[in-house]
Each structure stands twice: as structure tokens, then as C-alpha cells.
Image (tube, rainbow over all chains, first blue to last red):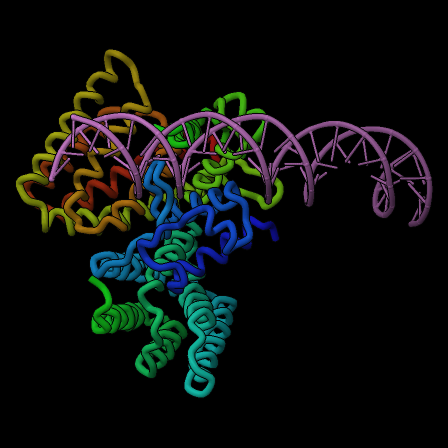
Length: 211
Length: 211
DNA sequence: AATTATCAAAATATATGATATATTTTATTT
DNA sequence: AAATAAAATATATCATATATTTTGATAATT
């Protein structure tokens, strides 16, 4: 893996998981040391992240981590619901046995990880990975790369607000989504997903660190 | 405007309007001369375009213009319909007098440009600009920056397939969309937009250069 | 004879450090 | 306190060095 690619993954992850503070300036000199990369390589990475929306580039004045806000959380939640509802519909319709296999497999890994949280404690990075992979599996037969890619970026941006583990309600919702998928119950899945996301928004707002 | 920014605009535009051929390799050395930029600046630009999906970056093997295909056109058309339907609904609901002003203004400019095509010939770049600004105005009160930005990228990618002017049907559809907007007729607008986009897809397919 | 494997040279891409340009801060003067 | 100039800091661009991939020639294998 190239220096640029691994640096990209690290910085992207550090933004999502709050290692780099929202709205914090990203000074090239200090990042050069922190990530062991040259300015040019850093700039390539920051340009990529800027067009994904994880970084804002203020022309001639450098880069900063994209801010977080209640408004932005609500927008991302709504957009995720819109994209994921549609993608689930299509995917449930077209999903074959291979698809069911992917869904069951992804759910198994997610559920096991969620159980492990109770004993070993939460690992947000691992949880995000399996959560993402489960929702991705659910929509993986939607037939549209563009839709899946768009959804994936929205999901990752959304996850900046979902860093705290919310416990058993989430686990039950994932199980219910699995059941709906195997029954091809699109309406049920949409309804559960809406609750899933809205309760996450409510939880994020209840912490009260946003404005 | 910085060298990087203007180069970005030019290269992005050259991809959308087919000056740079789909699937064509983007060699840094030759681009350096064509655009008068250094490799570093070019790489920043190509990285940005890669994460938007206009360019594909094959690790260690450089960059190429994103390919076009019937499948991709269909995906983008569907995604645009999904996003724009939802955004119109919200925007029609929330749109106030200022919004109506923006819509009327954008339509006026688009309609005038479309009329001018008959006498002065088509200028795809101008047409895209005003077409984009009209649809943007329609959804401008949707209340979600994330939705508008996502829509904007999808619109631009979609436009790679809409380079040929299609004539009076399009003009009538834009007029009908304006009427629906001012009447807050969401259902009507959705139906017209669907036709608008689907007939554009049909037209692109009828040319038969895609596969 | 045709195909595959090996290797060196050329072409190309990636990464770096240095320089030029722009922005912000500080100090000085009005 | 406001305005301006100088210094300090940071960003943007460039030219170059390093690493990778591709190409083409030769040798080995089927």
C-alpha cells in the first residue's frame, strides 16, 4: 500500500473518530511530523477528504476538519434514510441466495462484536466496521454502484455522530433488520431503519455536546 | 483564483464535456503541458476528481477518465430522480417568496438560453450551467446542504450523458416544472421530472455510442 | 514453432524537499 | 484606537529524486 493511501485511511479515520477535532485546523507542518508524510502527499490526501466533505479547504488559507452541528447530523440522518430505504427496497427485490449469505454473514459478525462489547468494552472502530458492513450487505443487491458509493460516504460522515455505543436497542434493531431481509419485508425494514437512525440522532442530541 | 482551482475547473469540465475521452489515460507529463500545471498540482486535482468519481485512480498505475456505460447512465438517472424528487418535495413545502424569485429567475435564464439555441446554435457549457442552476433553484429550499451537494455531483456526472440538445420537449418540461413549483404541485413536478430524465436516457441510448 | 519466463531499459507514477506566494501576526507610527 | 509596515508563519507550486510499472529483447520450455 502506498504512503498516500495509508495516510489517507489514517487521517480519514482520525476525523471520523474524533482524534482530529471538528473545526480544528490541519496545519501541514505539524501533520507532516504526526503522520510522517511530506506536504505534497498530505495535500493530496486533504484534497481527497475535502471533496468527500470530511475536510473543508478555505482557498489559500489551508484546511480544517469539517465542523459538526445538530443541523448537519439531521441532514445526514435524513439523507441516509432516503438512500438506504430506496437501496433496501431494490436489494430485497433482487436479492438471491448469495445475497442472503452475505447478509447472514455480516449480521453474525456484527452481533458477535456487539456481544463482546459487554465484556471486553467498546471498540468504536471495530463496531463501525461491522455495522457498516451489515448495512452494506443489506443493500448489496440494489444494482447500483453509484447508489452504494454515495450511501457509503454518507454513512461514514454520519458515523462521526454515532461514536458512543447505545446498547441493546441497537442490537435488537439489527436482528429485526436481518429478519425483515430474509422475509423480504421491505416496509418493516424501512420502519426499523427509520427508528434505528432517529434514535441514534436523539441519543447524540441528548449528550448535548453539539450545537 | 488559484492555479489549482482553475485547473480543477478546466479538467472537470473537459471530462464532463468529453474533451478528455472516457476511459482515456491521464498521463501526468502530457497534462503538465496541456494545462500548464506542475505534477503536484495536477495530482491534487486528480485526487479530488477521483473521490468525486470523474476520474479513477488505479494505485501506482496513475489516473484515467471514469468510463461511461449504459449501466452507469441508468444508475445516475435513477439516483438523480431519487434525490431530486425528495429535495423538490421538501423545497416546495418550505419555499417562500424569495425562493419563488430564485426559481423564476433561473427559469428565465434557462428559457432564454434554450431559445437562443435555435438561432445561434447550441453551447453545451452554457446550457448545462443554466439547466443546473434551474434544477438547483427548484430544490434550493430543501433545507439540506448535504442533499444539495450530493445532488449537484450526481447532476454533473449525469450530464456527461446529456451533451446533445434534445429540443422542444425539454423546453416544455422546464416550463411545466416552473408551473408546478409556483403551484406547489409536488406530485406533478415529480412526474414531469421522471419523464424529463427518462426521455433523456432514452435519447442517449438511441444514439447508440454507449455499451 | 509457439508460448512462457526472465531480465534490463524505458516510461511513468509517487514522494520529497526547496522555493515562491499568500496570509496572519506583531510592532511601529499616526 | 486605527492604520501601516515589517516580520513571522503557513500555504501553494515547482523541480527533482525515488519507486513502480510497462515494454521489448532474449532465453527457456512446451
